[in-house]
Length: 107
Length: 123
Image (cartoon, rainbow over all chains, first blue to last red; front, side, top):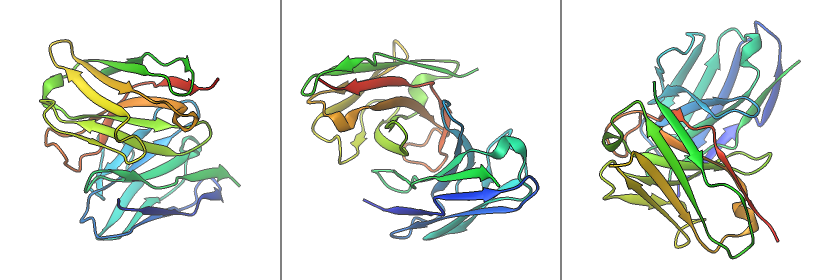
């Protein structure tokens, strides 16, 4: 199975900060990677699919980039509602695999 | 509006069996592949299984292969997960999730999720 390594596992940031989270796949996965946001007690929410396509209704401060093995999620200006845990998911080949998650906390 | 409503989660003894259901509405159910994703308490997300829209293709995570079986009844707009030989490490919230696009195995992600159902495996 493809391994997906997500980093960092947690980070502390302030409102207005630029935040970057990365995922690295153990082999090339084209652009078959998505990003999800999860808040406590809630189901995950799709933010970005196909590495860089913003899901409908998601604010434009979220962006994704990358292809092959290295991918990045960027929040350009962190808002209070963005404090959450973020996961990447490779959907290139089954079994699909999630990254370990990144918890974005208040600094 | 898409709605996914899981049910069937409960406390079960190790070695036991359980069937989860996910009732879908608000979209043409038979068009979309559906997956189960789980999350152990305080842990990350783990993809479990997928079934194509027709039900003809299925895949499983190595951790559940041979013990879990995914199925669907398109006439009832319902997804199922039959879980056998349950272990403590299967304890988790189980979410059903809808593929974002109609192409099986595509890269559109999961655009809709249920609220989850809790499975606890313990004696």
